[in-house]
Image 1 (cartoon, rainbow, N blue to C red):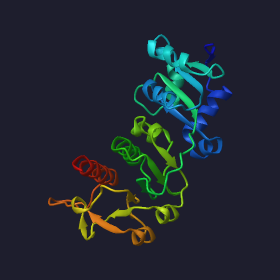
Image 2 (tube, one colour):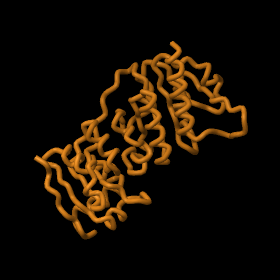
Image 3 (cartoon, helix red, strand yellow):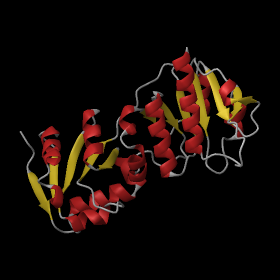
Length: 264
């Protein structure tokens, strides 16, 4: 049975105000265990991955799109569907053009990883674009276990979800993780990138289980995790550059691993 569609025409509506809080406040999202995705294709990815999406907000301008109708039909019967005009959508989205839909879903629980499964550890990554790009690269490279320190940006913040382009739903995201404990339990090679690393990334064997540690945009990896690594690798930069953006560095590391595995 298809959910019925309710109209919201005022920003004073309690349901609309709750949506605004979820979009604007990471604390509220964590407290309720929820996330909000924007756009048809990301919402389709969330449902295809099995996320529990209990609310769908439809832009009135997109009501007649076949993809929107398909999305509504894919929802569980107990889900709530609300139709908003484009003006209300513009108030809650940072996009230049209001999206067709917003879906409120329950945050998925991460799947436990065996100690020898490759992973990435993210320490205090603050920029939403960097976080989303790293997750997208991890999903593309097949490294599905991601551990995030308490100092990281909310991994399910709207800007991170937009940058991730659906990658979130193909990863096991461990929030508020004790990275020292995770690294200590790992049964494989523990690597950090460093400008002063004693080995080139391209000479490091990445064909076995690997844990990559990537640190804060400004301060990098903390001394404790740095010292716990088995190897400190550098990314050769023969041209002029002081350093690489953390998302770019992570992408290079992940796909060097892919390259090496392809050659085995």
